[in-house]
Length: 221
View 1 (spheres, rainbow, N blue to C red):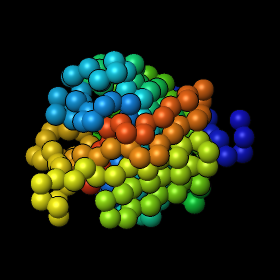
View 2 (cartoon, helix red, strand yellow):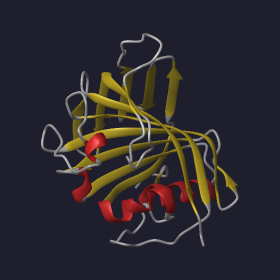
View 3 (cartoon, rainbow, N blue to C red):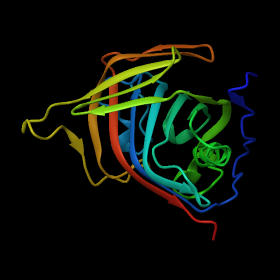
């Protein structure tokens, strides 16, 4: 274990210690499904187009806090390996937390993204079977126009672009859904997109991608 890595949080089904937290910002991802990923509309019940779902996720936190600790401006990257239907669980996840995060923010973000903090992401305690790694890293996120990108050294290098709609001013969207990330999902596709870490060698160029405004929270009560 390097000095940038931390012991992965211990997880068990239902392992949760609810905390007070909130995050507003944007989540975007690129996965191994062909365009467009069926997990969104089916709420994870439909099989991924390739039978499994491999993905990277990027979370840009515009405003946020965890038990009084400011999370605003921090970025998080996730490597996600799902063997079948999203809703059937057994996810394996690696977390890359912004190297600028304080110790309390780092710990809080790991609790949030493991589901241990409860609230919006609490379902992860039922879906994630293993945190395969958790580390500090330079998580660089760029959001410009119709494109989004994340770079975590040579481990994750991803760029996606919104799908153009009939109205050139509005991308293709799924609206008013009950999807876990949020009700409004912008459809996108991968451009240059690759993962090289934890024994995973994935390439998602031309594959399905999503962009979603997020407003998540949890309460210790």
